Amino acid sequence: MQTFKQIQWYPGHMFKSFKEIKQKLKLVDLVCVLLDARLPDSSMNPEILKTVKDKPILLIFNKIDMADEKILNWWVKHYQTLGFETLKVNAQSGQYTNQIFDKAKYILRERIARDEAKGLKMRPIRTMILGIPNVGKSTLINQLSKTKSTKTGNTPGVTKSQQWVKLAENFELLDTPGVLWPKFEDAKVGYHLAITGAIKDKILPEDDVCQYAIKFLQTHYLSRLQKRYDESITREMEYVDILDLIGKKRGALIKGNEIDYDRVYQIILTDIRNKQLGGLSFDRNDV
Image 1 (cartoon, rainbow, N blue to C red):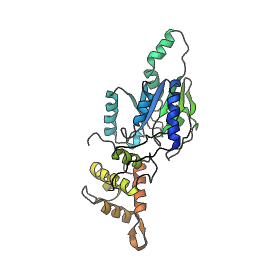
Image 2 (cartoon, rainbow, N blue to C red; image 1 turned 90 degrees about the horizontal axis):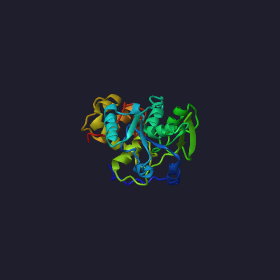
Image 3 (cartoon, one colour; image 1 turned 135 degrees about the vertical axis):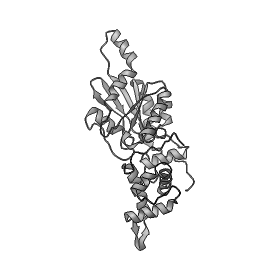
Image 4 (spheres, helix red, strand yellow; image 1 turned 120 degrees about the vertical axis):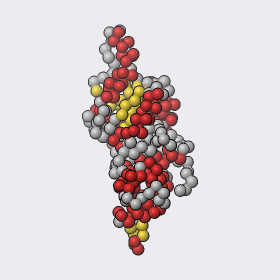
């Protein structure tokens, strides 16, 4: 595997977005931070927590159907011990998404009680949703609002501007583009974001990304690897031999029956991203 190069992928709109987020914080009562359930640590942008400071926070773990439930539950409890309110959802199907309204009211219960005690009509709860690219923010908002009020897509960076979205009678949300932090110091974070598609393909060499992914699967999900590709795969099998095996099985060949490694990389990454190997958790509590 090549030496990990520090990733610097910070498009201009992300810099602008963070600046606007800081300006708009005073308008919101609550910040929802959306995390990838497969990457509860790697998808936690440290700059977000620094930016929101003392605002109440709800951590929402999205894509729970794509994660290893046991590992995810460990992370949820971990964040709860740090004092965060948490919620697990599947924005694609809508599973548990309506609980966000009740969670928000619970988190802001003291403010709501004060207003009621003064005889004031309940003010709309205003929240902001933050998270890294491709974590499912727009999909979640569309589920909550039951409209196609925001543009969605499967590639990072689709949302480029901020907009208020009315989600319910007394619930409004400020949508924001996905934001990464300027540099990834930890190699694992970069690989995890690349494997799941949070950063654009080609930012890291696909060979490096797939090598990391295969070694990870050999260590933690060997039976899944065997079931998907070939029973002969072992924990000790060399990476290139696994690529050759997959290439031959899937017909990823070029002239002279040589392996088309670029196609094999795409097969592996597509299978991971499309749940063909089941629910996977890349941030582990056991490593």
